[in-house]
Image (cartoon, rainbow, N blue to C red; front, top):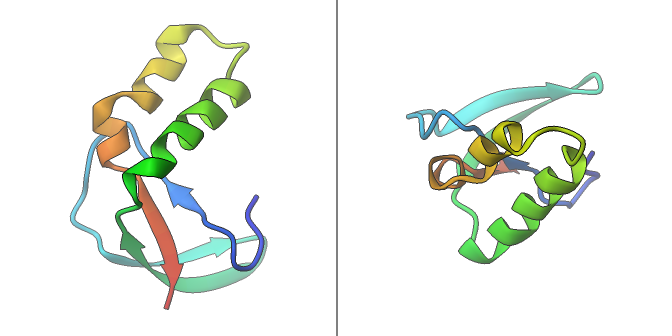
Length: 80
């Protein structure tokens, strides 16, 4: 969970989509956001977080979340 001012990367194993703006609702709070491509330097930390969180699952479950297509579909959600 990210707090105010912290980065909140969004990722998917299905590849990129054309959405650049959205309304996100979490914990009863709704915010309009835009999607920005994160600096490549953040991807290793994101991959490590997935591996750590899903360590009890087989590699076949985690691998799609850290492969190049998922990395290419990872964005920062920036409040508007």
